[in-house]
Every structure is written in structure tokens, then in C-alpha cells.
Image (tube, rainbow, N blue to C red):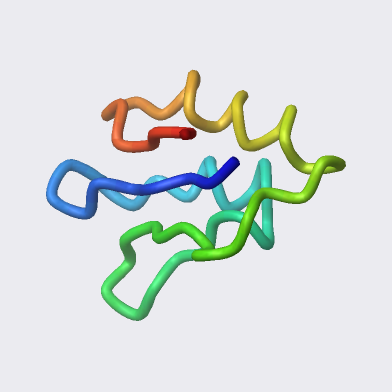
Length: 62
């Protein structure tokens, strides 16, 4: 599975990067972005939690 972040709606709170570092990072403009690789099994639960808790619903797991 992979993740995407809608950079138009992301406000850069950083919750996702704290929950699943390596899946989500914060870029120079303060917005989150997702790794282009598959989500590692040991981070899947944290990535899903980040998606569920994102205040702007900017994260999708597919």
C-alpha cells in the first residue's frame, strides 16, 4: 500500500510525520508529503492512524 498527501489542503501540522516518519515527511514549505515507496508493514498501523487523525483529511492510503 502507498500513501498520498493533498498539498492543497495540508496545513502542515506535522502529526503524520511524527506518527509515521519515513512514510510522511515535511518539506521546506512546511507541508507534508508521502514517500513514493510502499508503506512498510511495521509502519502501516501508524500511517493509517495518521490518515484518520489528519485534521484536514489530506492523507489517503491506497
